[in-house]
Length: 113
Image 1 (cartoon, rainbow, N blue to C red):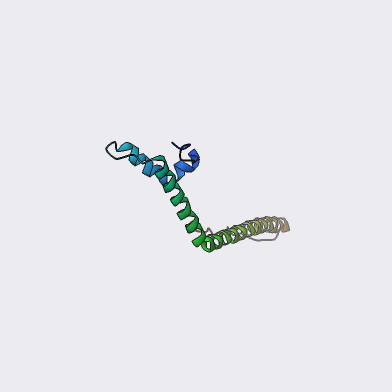
Image 2: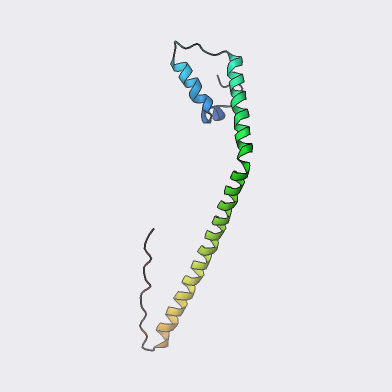
């Protein structure tokens, strides 16, 4: 059926056409559409999808840009956290080696979100 409608299997199963075809095939009393009707419906749905993508293109771009920005900020914060951890370890080691009467307090715990 996919080949007749000129739709790949992967596209078919991801599309809303799959559910419509499944409902038609499961209802034997319903008249089955002709091949041209199916092709027209697939064409109509593809056109509707293109229009939706075009209408929401700026929103999608904005969301992708925001996602990239957050990913970059997370990466920078992760690197900075690693640097601070290394600096903290060096400082603690220097305090221990100094031999002075210095008490090292444990770091406060951060509550989990």
